[in-house]
Image 1 (tube, one colour):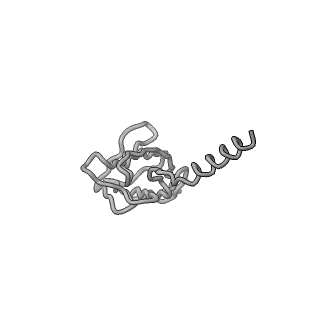
Image 2 (image 1 turned 90 degrees about the vertical axis):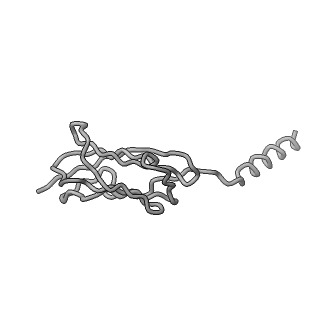
Image 3 (image 1 turned 120 degrees about the horizontal axis):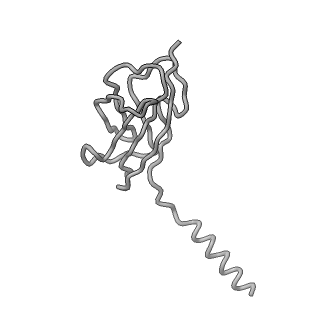
Length: 122
Protein backbone atom coordinates (compact mmCIF):
# COMPACT_ATOMS: atom_id res chain seq x y z
CA UNK A 1 0.00 0.00 0.00
CA UNK A 2 2.86 2.40 0.78
CA UNK A 3 4.40 1.64 -2.62
CA UNK A 4 1.11 2.58 -4.34
CA UNK A 5 0.95 5.83 -2.36
CA UNK A 6 4.53 6.71 -3.26
CA UNK A 7 3.87 5.87 -6.92
CA UNK A 8 0.74 8.06 -6.92
CA UNK A 9 2.60 10.98 -5.30
CA UNK A 10 5.46 10.61 -7.77
CA UNK A 11 3.00 10.62 -10.68
CA UNK A 12 1.33 13.79 -9.36
CA UNK A 13 4.73 15.42 -8.98
CA UNK A 14 5.76 14.55 -12.53
CA UNK A 15 2.44 15.71 -13.99
CA UNK A 16 2.84 19.03 -12.20
CA UNK A 17 6.29 19.43 -13.77
CA UNK A 18 4.92 19.41 -17.33
CA UNK A 19 4.69 22.98 -18.67
CA UNK A 20 1.18 24.22 -19.35
CA UNK A 21 0.24 25.36 -22.84
CA UNK A 22 -1.78 28.39 -21.81
CA UNK A 23 -3.32 30.82 -24.23
CA UNK A 24 -2.46 34.49 -24.25
CA UNK A 25 -3.98 36.60 -21.50
CA UNK A 26 -4.95 40.23 -21.29
CA UNK A 27 -2.52 41.85 -18.83
CA UNK A 28 -3.26 45.56 -19.26
CA UNK A 29 -5.81 47.87 -20.84
CA UNK A 30 -6.06 51.60 -21.42
CA UNK A 31 -8.48 52.73 -20.19
CA UNK A 32 -8.42 50.12 -17.44
CA UNK A 33 -11.41 47.93 -16.56
CA UNK A 34 -13.89 49.74 -14.29
CA UNK A 35 -11.96 53.02 -14.65
CA UNK A 36 -13.73 56.35 -14.32
CA UNK A 37 -11.89 58.80 -16.56
CA UNK A 38 -12.34 62.57 -16.71
CA UNK A 39 -10.80 62.91 -20.16
CA UNK A 40 -12.37 60.82 -22.91
CA UNK A 41 -9.81 58.42 -24.37
CA UNK A 42 -8.85 58.75 -28.04
CA UNK A 43 -8.21 55.02 -28.34
CA UNK A 44 -8.38 51.61 -26.66
CA UNK A 45 -5.06 49.81 -26.15
CA UNK A 46 -5.03 46.18 -24.95
CA UNK A 47 -1.78 44.50 -23.93
CA UNK A 48 -1.38 40.72 -23.75
CA UNK A 49 1.29 38.56 -22.16
CA UNK A 50 2.57 37.38 -25.56
CA UNK A 51 2.51 38.44 -29.19
CA UNK A 52 -0.75 38.05 -31.10
CA UNK A 53 -1.22 36.60 -34.57
CA UNK A 54 -2.86 38.59 -37.31
CA UNK A 55 -4.45 36.43 -40.01
CA UNK A 56 -6.85 38.83 -41.66
CA UNK A 57 -9.39 41.44 -40.68
CA UNK A 58 -11.52 39.26 -38.42
CA UNK A 59 -8.75 37.55 -36.43
CA UNK A 60 -8.48 40.46 -33.96
CA UNK A 61 -11.40 42.72 -33.09
CA UNK A 62 -12.22 45.51 -30.64
CA UNK A 63 -15.83 46.66 -30.49
CA UNK A 64 -17.08 49.40 -28.17
CA UNK A 65 -20.71 49.99 -27.21
CA UNK A 66 -22.26 52.82 -25.21
CA UNK A 67 -24.71 52.54 -22.28
CA UNK A 68 -27.58 52.12 -24.77
CA UNK A 69 -25.73 49.14 -26.32
CA UNK A 70 -25.09 51.08 -29.54
CA UNK A 71 -21.83 50.68 -31.42
CA UNK A 72 -19.30 53.47 -31.04
CA UNK A 73 -17.42 54.31 -34.25
CA UNK A 74 -13.83 53.08 -34.33
CA UNK A 75 -11.07 53.02 -36.93
CA UNK A 76 -7.44 51.95 -37.46
CA UNK A 77 -7.44 48.58 -35.69
CA UNK A 78 -3.80 47.69 -35.15
CA UNK A 79 -1.88 44.62 -33.99
CA UNK A 80 1.71 45.25 -32.94
CA UNK A 81 3.38 42.41 -31.08
CA UNK A 82 1.42 41.94 -27.86
CA UNK A 83 -0.68 45.11 -28.32
CA UNK A 84 -4.10 45.40 -29.92
CA UNK A 85 -5.52 48.89 -30.37
CA UNK A 86 -8.27 50.88 -32.05
CA UNK A 87 -8.98 54.61 -32.32
CA UNK A 88 -12.32 56.36 -31.86
CA UNK A 89 -13.75 58.21 -34.88
CA UNK A 90 -15.12 60.97 -32.66
CA UNK A 91 -14.94 62.15 -29.06
CA UNK A 92 -16.76 60.03 -26.50
CA UNK A 93 -19.53 61.70 -24.54
CA UNK A 94 -19.96 61.16 -20.78
CA UNK A 95 -21.34 57.73 -20.02
CA UNK A 96 -20.53 54.07 -19.52
CA UNK A 97 -18.83 52.08 -22.28
CA UNK A 98 -18.25 48.37 -22.82
CA UNK A 99 -15.17 47.12 -24.65
CA UNK A 100 -15.64 43.74 -26.35
CA UNK A 101 -12.46 42.15 -27.70
CA UNK A 102 -11.34 39.04 -29.53
CA UNK A 103 -7.69 38.28 -30.24
CA UNK A 104 -5.78 35.49 -31.92
CA UNK A 105 -3.44 34.01 -29.34
CA UNK A 106 0.15 33.26 -30.33
CA UNK A 107 -0.69 29.55 -30.34
CA UNK A 108 -3.45 30.12 -32.89
CA UNK A 109 -6.42 29.90 -30.49
CA UNK A 110 -8.90 32.78 -30.27
CA UNK A 111 -9.39 34.42 -26.88
CA UNK A 112 -12.00 37.00 -25.95
CA UNK A 113 -13.37 39.13 -23.17
CA UNK A 114 -15.06 42.35 -22.24
CA UNK A 115 -14.81 45.12 -19.68
CA UNK A 116 -16.39 48.47 -18.89
CA UNK A 117 -15.17 51.97 -18.22
CA UNK A 118 -16.92 55.29 -17.61
CA UNK A 119 -16.26 58.76 -19.03
CA UNK A 120 -17.23 61.30 -16.36
CA UNK A 121 -16.23 64.76 -17.61
CA UNK A 122 -16.35 67.54 -15.04
